[in-house]
Length: 506
Image (cartoon, rainbow, N blue to C red; front, side, top):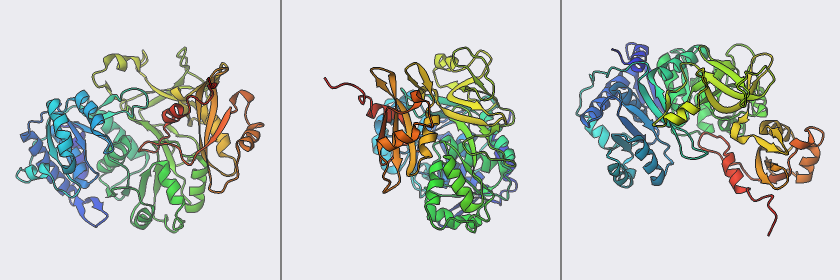
């Protein structure tokens, strides 16, 4: 029996002499070195008692060795569990207690705090630092590189990624070897990624975008990447002449547009810019194309499903949409109340079926069953619609739907009108408890520096653009919107912050 995902990665590595990773300081890792070092790490974690199916929790800084640790876990048959580097000890206690990993790997400076937590849950701790230091690499240095890869089939677990937990406790999404491989192959083909491509990788690697989209697609294509610890616009611009591909979140493109060095000459050698993880404003799409001549390709995915849809590589990349279903993936929009599949133009719940869809939530069989339809579609929680040309539009999260005076109001529609106003940078529309309407439509608006917008001016401007029941009851100005690490606006925090806005004083 083969190792389903890693065998495909190994085949893409070829003779091993091609560059896999280059860092900002010029250090290069070939595919051959990646195979050798990941074999040593796999041998080391085997000595530590990790067996196929065991979880390995990892909270370390982004580095080439962190990616090779991921490969080592695939090779050993372990279930890779990446954790956000911003998580506190209290949060780590929950994740370690829920996943019950055999091994927890953290930075050397974090070891003292994590060790007691890990021990209480029966786990052991080793360390890995971005510069290559730490106890794990000390162990690996004495191990052989010719590790015999564990037998893993398509349905075996490769990773657990915890959801962001915007409501209630985070849930562990179980992703199989074939979930990851099928999606990487589909994206490689759709985006025409070849060994000649070089990716600018500035995303975190504890999230599906940076790990399973950016990294796995690079590996499956046998291409190379510039691995950067974080996003820096000036550094990105310096790397563009030597690169062909960039994957980012909308914030990356907004910040690039703020840099005077971004122009057609700077982006002339680039082949493709991809955006995801959060909605890309149509204004950002248009401004970037005007400045660079490149239309950003927006796609749609989530922790539980990897990627579902993509705007076309050839053809119109329609701003404000996430394109068409990927090959082998079925996407439909249904009425949440009746399950009826809706026609183009009708808004409902997005449901997904395909080899990319996860196996279920870790140790939550009842929750898993509740999130699938009787005919096997995953209920995404996202509201959307198909247009007449087949492009999918994301309207918002189901939990973000505002019900005011008995009417359903989709925040995206109101936000789009507000964002069109001169002086507005962006907006977020939420529902807040209202004594008369049930929920009051409430807009939090970020304006350009020096903009003279007032609440009355915004409301007056919306008077002829939106039906009265959709118009906000209040406009609140803010310097910025709260976001998670991938750039998604955290509307749950806004709802909590303004929960008493319409309550009468006692």
